[in-house]
Image (tube, rainbow, N blue to C red; front, side, top):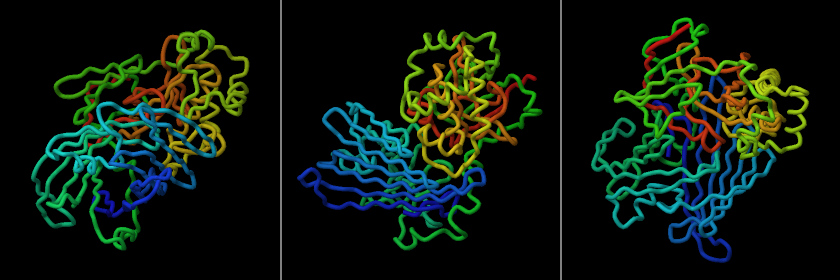
Length: 446
């Protein structure tokens, strides 16, 4: 399958099914690979995702994943044991374990379309779950048969049968021929997958694959009217439409209202004000769950704990301590947009470079290690006339969740940060892709 973005070839995907043995018994193994060659913020971004799934009677018994980008490698090994899935995640030389419950309302699959075609009634929608290797979590999908449709494939119009994959992160339209073979798949942001010969699919694009294709530019949201003097904006009110959300965070940073036209968000960021903050001990007592180590946020690791103590020193005010951690991360880290995998905070600390979510993961780990409750957040930030995807951390000061964006010099967030999701890695970094979203500025206040 050739992988295209806005008509330009940027990679490929392939899948091979073979007969194999697993734990002494016959099994079917599916080996898949996706190669993506684009850019992010002007930096080359190449991702190589490989997976293998062993299954019997259409049910997985083991899944392995290997994701590589800019020399960074993350692997995941999932073993299906009755009602449990045991995961081993290796990231930057660090190993973490996690257990997931097998869902009761649908099977875990490696290919949602194949699951529909295996079902007795291909005309009925089907719920399935896919394993996200980056966040080591299960994502609920719905496979919805739509019916006959015309589709353009490499400039030629063909008749097909359309099936929609409803994924909360990003939906896909899949078009099948009369023999249930994929003739084309359409994803968000102008992404297309088209079957083609092996040599043609594996060959780089002309010009070079991904040249001039920048994901940040392709995924940005340009508001209907530009924001005047954005550096002076203290409050912002916008209408976000054309996107589906189960919910949007509504808290001290922003107030969210659902309307017939979409979501109205009023951004009124929590100010950086140490006089509003409790001590670290008091803040920790109020939100003890957010001090615990979690996937990629190893708050108990000795190197993270030692560094947090050194940075914070004798400071006991939660807000001031959070500001010290912010200042250290901002000063020490270097941006590198070419790293496409999620990374453990220890690996981020070792390299001291990464994208915004790496800054956020390291910041959250240091905050928790210092005893300050912390969580991750992701959403949008306004810059150069458009809203771009962004990530940051939040620190609980005993009264508020204070935004900590270590990619920027200021303490606290601006009114130009719109929050879409929050939590640990599994929640904060699994959010809807805003492919068709429109954003209208309703009010600004300086």
